[in-house]
Amino acid sequence: MNRVVLRATGLVALALAVASCGKGATDSTPPVPLTTVVGIDLVADADSLLVGDSLVVTARGVNREGTVLPLANIVWTTTDSGVGAITPNGVVRGRNIGTIRIDAQALGAAGGRPIRIVPRPLRVRLLAPDTVQLVDVVEVSTEIETTAGLRLTEIAPRLAVTDTTVAQLVPVGLGRATLQLVGPGRTELLAVIGRDTTRRRFVVRLSPLQSLSLNIPARVLAVGDSVPYFVTAIDSLGRVVPPAGTIFTVEPSGPVFLRNGHMIAVALGRVIVRATNGTQSSRDTITAQGPSEFPLDIVDGDGQNPLPLRVLLSMERVAIKWRQVLRSTQGGDFVRLQIGQCRNAVTVAQFISGVRVLIKLDSLPNRIAGQGGPCVLRSNGLPLLGTVSLNRFRWSALSDRKLDDLIQHEVGHVLGIGTIWGRGSFTALVDGDSTAVDPIFVGPSAVGAFAKLGGSSRFAGRPVPLEVAVRGHWRGDAFGAEVMAPSLISADQVTSAVTVAALRDLGWVVESEAYDEYTLPDAVLRASSSARVAIAVESLERDMLLPKLMITPDGRMVALDVMGRPVRR
Image (cartoon, rainbow, N blue to C red; front, side, top):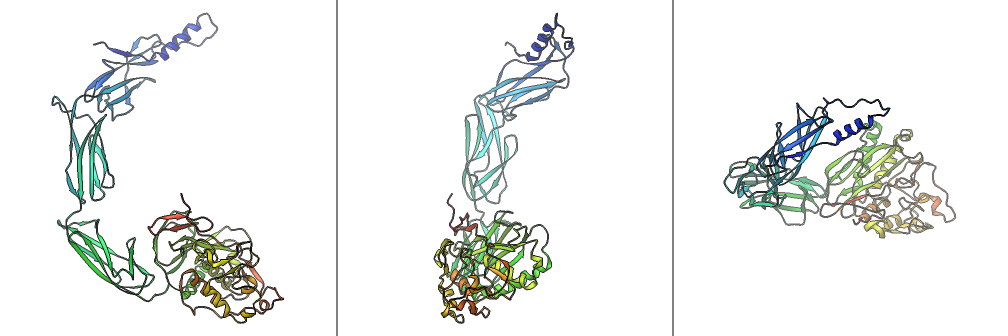
């Protein structure tokens, strides 16, 4: 057999050229010493080998004249050890079909050559069970032989599965892997060598259960609230196993529904909840009763430093005020947000049954005392999570009462006042856009409440008046002393029946009588007057933050445009 020599002659030729050019010239650069290795030749008996066979590659050092010099401490590498591996002694072992490059380095020089690994007739056995239970630990291995019966231990077939929703492979060695079982179903295991593929059917079944238990921690649930439920499954060997494949039913189906591991009460009544898995079944009961205190949480969402005590105390006072107005929700949902995904400075990963408000201090423009609005909406358009930002340079100058008024005002925006009306499914609640000279809110409950205000029959404009060019606040000259007016004023600001009624028009369940006494000021009951009723301390006309995300009925989160409509991708 002819020996194949691939010589790294580039450096040798360069050295000779330099030496040649130096004759008779003025260049005094000395030539590379003849004892210096300037290149490495790789010598082998062939440039290809069969899968499973070995080939010895010899490295020879050469000087600038091509004379062979001895080498020591040779470092061997290969471009793909899955196709062909090489030992520290220069022995190449063919593992799979393909082409690799073998490289050798020593004494600052290097050389390389390609080696092709070519196919040979093989028998591949894929060793794994045909059927397993979901809780089993499964190992997969292979045996490779030539058609003549020679066992090939160095070949590394590539292992795969056709359906990763049933099982996933974790390699643990040459031709070996562990299967992570994901769910019940049928798939195929594959062992691939070049263009040849060996297949084996693989079935994952649910473990036969010895028992199944359903546990609901709370037997009584207020309408609008939620409670988690837990299922424990024990197989025939006494092991606690995942309750995959368990089917849940609620009878009757109206008062309570199940979502994201929680039971949510939406109407009054008593229901039976049943969990069924194969022949095993378990049941529990839960009663939905009248609404409890509304689950409105106003929390520290700054993410940098704890909020000052004054702000925390104000947050709690404001939460109590709004909880007196709201009575129940229309179902909650699980919210997952990374920092900054929805104006949030902290991560969010929790089930929210009412409304959660994240408050932070922020570097706002000097003219803006605070900003607030919903960030994540329910599928019906009502807010689920919102944010409030306070101007870190201006909040401390406010009195406790004015700080309460500011936070209550911004939380009102989070609940949807001004931020969702006129948008999305609430477009019809507003008559007139931001360019209208006389925009009004036309929700029937709010219109009725406005009609009952003292002297409102003499009001010169159309009810219910919104601030011109803003639409997100009650008009200042009529509602200057109301909490949702476009300004903080020096006088006390109250929650009027119109604000409570507007929340009902949006779809909230409210306590109809949870409002403060409020009368339209004399200045606006006279058609000839347009004077402001109080001195403004802070303007709030640029404080609204619009919703950015909505959770769909199937639990997905979609982006919203400025008009509150889902963005189609």
